[in-house]
Length: 144
Image (cartoon, rainbow, N blue to C red):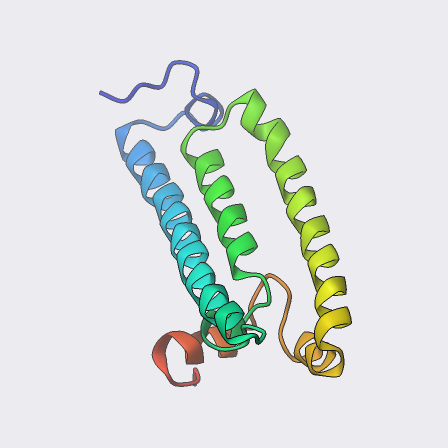
């Protein structure tokens, strides 16, 4: 039995067990994708830092902040799963904090790495990859 009592989406949309299953799958997809981005990003930053370079390959070749994107996807997935007043209030604050942190980090990266990092900024989007780049990174080919 679906526990719909007090669940925002069930109350607003009036769905039953099928709707709940779809909602759980969608939320889980966002959460798992987010966690995978955090893990992949962390691994690449760890290796790059040990080598004294900027992480610009792998997932960092399609977005400059995959870990923050991953956190935001996981937060969004949780909002799909089980929104509460607290999570609805905190989600935009979390997003604002990570966007602000990303800008501060990038300013420091420009100070440390200079023109090469500026060129990287011009080529690679901050949080949301370009479709073609993402497909190429995932599958080794371009769409079409």
